[in-house]
Length: 372
Ligand code: PLP
Image 1 (tube, rainbow, N blue to C red):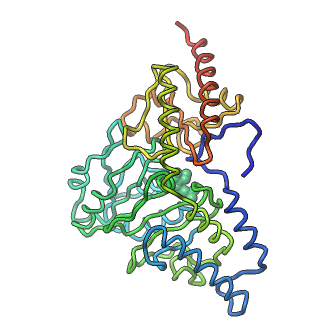
Image 2: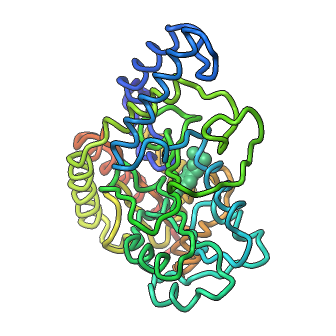
Image 3: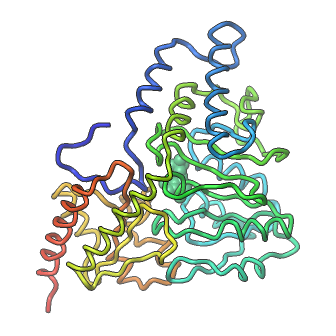
């Protein structure tokens, strides 16, 4: 992993740096020569074994059957595939989901939305009440990508089981940042490689055994016919390596850094508002700086070598205020002042201290422009 000299990357919810171990594992795999797991010769058999091993490693991490893991090109793909399969009736979701879910539900004529409170939390009774005879899919995230707020997945899974409705969870914002498990009642859970120091262009999903999925990609029948297209063995190996490197102690360390970051910032800039409530994954700190324009602050921070974001990664470049924060009922002026800082296991205390001093400097500079 290399990085720009002296820069501080605090945008790990957008994407993470590739870990050295992952890169090494992939280079070794690419060096093996042509590897098509469907080929019926010695290199093909070798490719098949490597792919199986990668699948097994991921399945063991989640304590699920090996066949339940399907490799994908990105998490968006898996989310769309589950959506296409199960959106035959009404869909129950929220408006604070990542665009890969929201663009599906928004364009579906029969979506019901559960409201989200200002701290990002969900009211379980609204889910119960929102289910009708026609509900065919419950679609929620494990953790919100913009605030890190955790949804009560276990309780939602119990509701799904009780009503026998497929529940699909976007696990992207949670993996590597909290202890993940797949409760009974979950039909599918989707994860992305580039958010866990794995290779971009790699993702995987858990598909509950016995679930039939509509094939988005029709073709050679790879991945049990769920996702046709020749698998990239090197990407699968890199992805499995990235998963195998995830440890609980990393969340604990990120949590400590986040606590330090937030309490120090609150000390120096007392008017800040920390968004997302108290039940959050370890690595996200979304902070509103009342009276300050987040876009200008981000530009100044960028000049100082601190990289963070405003809104979700996929909306980066667009100057629109964050839909998710607005849907949480956070007032527009506060949303326009909010910046998401997201850490990784490679973020150091030294970087946090340095970033803090730059943030305080930039905030004070911006304040000087506010007419009194
Ligand atoms: N879900 C969440 C919470 C995300 O943050 C992202 C990526 O930004 C996705 C889904 C989509 O993942 P991918 O980039 O692998 O399609």
